[in-house]
Image 1 (cartoon, helix red, strand yellow):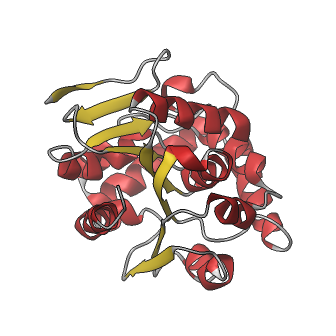
Image 2 (image 1 turned 180 degrees about the horizontal axis):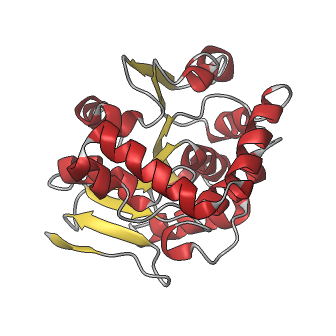
Length: 255
């Protein structure tokens, strides 16, 4: 069994689980870091090899400016470290990075799980993404971090709240990340990928839940799971259901 290792700048991902387990690479959303995946790491690390990545402008890569290219390169490096092929699980911004990666390197992605990112950041939706990105970059950072910390710990409890935020908050990095995906055509990347896809949405995450059918229409090899009562952080709102869905997805993948 591999020991848990903290991420470093040279290797900006945390590794947990058996060396010979099937690899999963987890990619976090804007503001957060690898630590948002703590519920899944605790559940799955006994059976699979988990790599939880820090994207540029987040976590240990906070000083590296986010671009979609750099995000894809970071996740690809984690996949290469895991043996060159892995299931990739992306949440929010991490889901868009995962789609871009899968479209560019389909042979490296055994299966793709995307959560909270089933809306194209283009056309009318472009405005929503741009406003969100601008707010993250302009709002004073220290007060925002304090508010987010208080809300998450109140909502999830002090133990879980502390665990999922142990990698810190990165509002400016999140703003850079969201801005970088605006105007992207991510459905096209899913079509280029062509492999097995599981899309997950919380029913209370209205922006992405309501856009899912249109976003996924015509995409081959895709299944869609709605987690009732979950919000944007569906992996934390209902970690057991999220983790079970990922495991079921993996078990159905061809070798």
